[in-house]
Image (cartoon, rainbow, N blue to C red):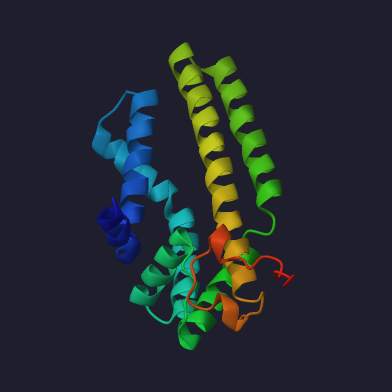
Length: 196
């Protein structure tokens, strides 16, 4: 699984391609009329805006990390909670964390807006389409919003934990006690022991 994750992180085009393909499959399942090729082309065309936004965000993150391999390495460290010990890596991690925290500062409002949109689409589909499409959109709404809420909270916790370990500064330079140590509860120093 880790190998697949590294491949997708290194080859961003594969993530975009799989996203468009998954969207086309979903549309084909909900609306089986027409050929899959035509559905795939329509999905790709309607996804151009989202793809452009994703590419711009990826370019900014790659610039913050220094390179694609650097971004892949920092992503892995964020997932595992491994605080970089090298000063250059710590600075790159600090820039990446600051960038992502800034970008996701309105995540709760965005999730609420997504929930409103998906519920509204499901209700309107119930009035204008058949039970197949209505049930499909209802399932998609529950699964997608649950997944987005879980992943968003997980990523937010990871970012805040790493930010605290780095000292909360854009340079990514924290206290020497946290350098090179994983983000575990054992790594947090407790109160000093008093000698009797």
